[in-house]
Length: 391
Image (cartoon, rainbow, N blue to C red; front, side, top):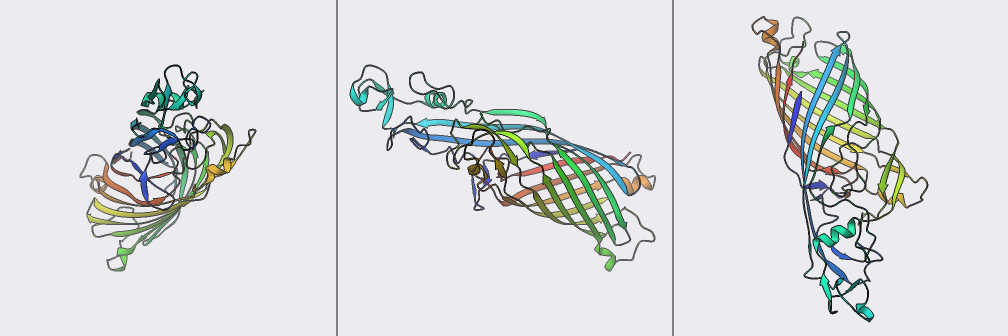
């Protein structure tokens, strides 16, 4: 069992590898005809938006594995998510040139949206913009059908993973194993009608392959153990290289088909999304400081291929949603761990128990500037605390 305590984050990595606000597509935008096409005349606006998102995550991860033989293990991983998006959303209408008509008007002052120089006019408010995004304003616009842009909270299961792991080589120096598994789309997917929600699942099944390579490098300068043993001794240093591959299978999802720089649209379509396959390369080292107490450091580089999206009945330009969906990430993890297993085997402790404390930082990456895309790469850090109990 492991709990991931995330630091709040307001940023993601964009396609150029630079950190930007998660709400960058909505923040500090002049609300003109490019945002609300057909409602406002070119060159005029109703004000400037202020939007900030702060994502807060807590993930409680349960894992269970069973040794079918001393080399073959079956396991399952079940994460539980709790998320909160703290939203700040308002309109600054001080620079607006257009407003709502509140009384009789003639000529250019007779429409529902009129120049602010007209008599019987008022500036748009934050609530007016929320209405435009949602059900609309009677006599002005039929709206876009979005839910209010406000704080969002949710919790639920993440995507469940099940796998078999087989250790095909075990010597004094080497431990080599392979894992084959599957990921099931049991987590929350994006709501296309909510600009402020936090999804945590791309919604597709995936076939998983892992190749694990452990090398006890300290055997080069230490005396070799009398027999093969999985228990590290004081001064042991183990290097690990792990290759991970996720073969993501296509699935049908409902999306809003907007332009890359403006997700505000009424174009909704059920499309087939082939979520890009993912590759990860991990390199780590684990050093046994004293018997039972170890420290480890891990570096991971990962990249994901571009999503492929196929339009079904509506024929909207869904290829726009593929833009920048190829992504990369780099992170490191520092872990301190203590295990009573050596003492338990020596009958000096009543039960085996492992406890570990980790710090993870995703310090670089790249991905799409689209908060609704499951391919976006958030700039996140967390501290995790975990327990392992063999029985």
